[in-house]
Length: 550
Image (cartoon, rainbow, N blue to C red; front, side):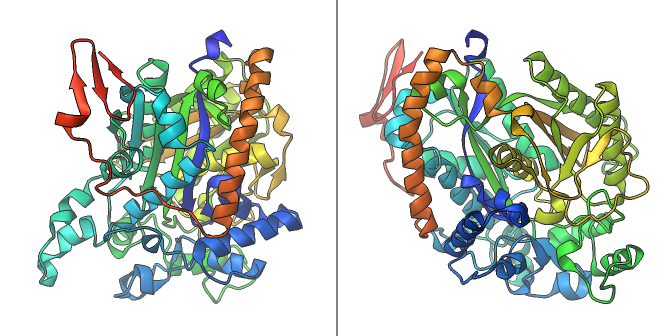
């Protein structure tokens, strides 16, 4: 285990998107619902009912009230600008009926902040260890990291929307509007109101690769011995008229006219009525992207810390590869950077001994004309260079929508679900590849496929963003990681893990009954420097924290 002591591993996940919440693979299960057994479907149905506080009583209800679907104008478009002016009526909305603002004292928080609170709480509760009593006391406060933020900002009226609109509509901006607009506010809320963290903090906005850019900060900190534990994530709520209008101007978003034309070209059964649920078709003859909302968070620590403390090992990471595109025709056009990031991602996993022959790629797959040809060329050329044949590729945005900053987090949650259940979610909205999609060395999973997870050492995440923000990352399987643990250490670890699993089961039961107990500690336990802190030449002592060694 010597070389892997500081290998970064995932010890918990949490979050929410249009498929449901991330813990216990619920959102993943929604993506493969047709392949689930009766008990798994029943469990998914119960969780969605608890989450939405509504009557989702059948599979039909699940299909109608989750994933990409017709926009709920009452929630997202009350002035009907998207519906009547822009003619954009499909989006990946959170499951119908959910109201995060009612789950805690939200104090008019922007939706992105509400999703942050939910996602981080879900991640912490899912860990099976109490943060305040079982994890934080073991950590040097300066070796805790929090890296979280959206790609664009807190976009609704409680944030940037209110800051920009107030004067024009005859109102005054409040003192909250400016601070709530900041992209770093997601990380700030986690530190100040959830963890009480004194450690490293920040966010890197890398367009649609933002989640991976944040992850890169955590992995570098762990590998450089600057961090021992980190919360990484992103939350974005981009479904509103202003952001829709921006993407409409790029011609990249699917409006109803484009969707109908696509349905006719594809000889769909119903070509007279817009099929909003299948409006986005990655790598097919498509009409454009669809916006989605999501929050995805992971807890990352060292393999050594996970083993010592019996934390569940869900997977692990090699480095995040990040490269720009060089000279470009336009800020939104593709370039050469993504070829480099994907090749680096494969090389990084090979260097630690992973087999790549049975590996899987979860592509960026936006559903635009430009993406289908350029990303397929990236993957095809990389597969050729690494001598891979029938490299399995899937994509999620046809079902989830494009969630911007958290998009690669959606991919990560799905990768972990694949290892837990042996099913690759298909690109279900795409029935046939477009003629300009390159696939000589690729196997696009248009339908859900079973896979032998023991043979899959690595799953690759890919993210491409405006401006040349390319990020790719290899996620390493839990079984590969455990193979690097000494047998005696593994036995001790598995004994400790049983207690962790028992506590995770308690959270599963509580949350299934609608008790999420969201963590939001407003004005609680505020430290007083004169009473709670003492500084000497070699250390800083702070009440309820481990001493900081200077």
